Image (cartoon, rainbow, N blue to C red; front, top):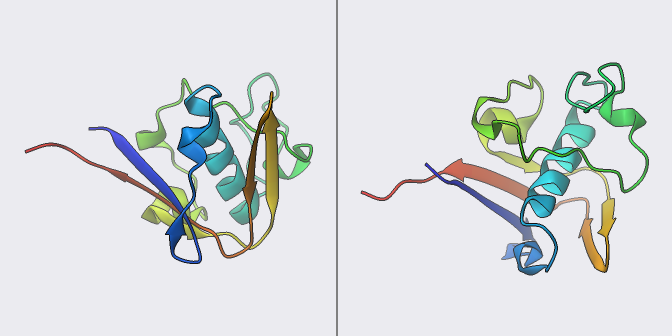
Length: 117
């Protein structure tokens, strides 16, 4: 079942998936922003440093979720993970090569599973 995702700003979808960078990068940015926004003290998901929290990530630094099983993440207090939808309270900016993703307060992150019947 594929993971479908969407980011809405003022009710309109952002086109972050059209960027030329690695297809996982927008997903990494989205989940990093969601976790940092809701549970910044979360540990154990940052490769190479089990004690580093999301709150300790440098501005623009994102966690690589490409080899994580997003479906099975268990992050109490993170609405995107628990309910599939989260409205951000803070601004986040991520850069990779020439690509930039900016999430603004009020942006709505959504993630759900889909299947073809």
